[in-house]
Length: 114
Length: 115
Image (cartoon, rainbow over the protein chains, first blue to last red):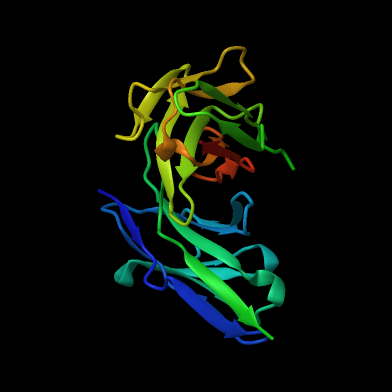
């Protein structure tokens, strides 16, 4: 069965510092991978997605993620964090087929300090 | 950009009451989903709906839950007799045909509080 692991429950970075949020997945075939961001009390906003092709994916708000098949990882990065990036970040994987349901990781809560 | 619309944004109900959560998916999408997120926990899959029938449901989606697409635009989740543990944020999502080239679009959620 597919699963997604986000090893870091809580991360604090300084504003302007670089950021990397880790995501590892378990899936037998080529996965479809997603990163979502959720501000407190809000819905889920898609940051970026990977289906195939170039393993470095650019998203919104200056985020990027790199798919590494050999490491079963899809880590999210941002070169310079802004205070408004404080939120919870969820990695998710989808399998193919008629259902295409998303399996989410447990999330990483990002705090940004001045 | 097309949106998935959910109503109400917040609902408070008494234990044992029936609730209906409503969603208007993106009009040309074919796959519809309900997910829930208990406070402080991860987002969990409840049910997927395709071609006017349930295509998959999780173990959470027991006989107390049902989904409908009554008029070709709305997509509803009904909980027949709510329990305290049904308190959560419920997200509707829709997706175009095939995962390749599409991302799921989520609604902003309905926060259900069972008292």
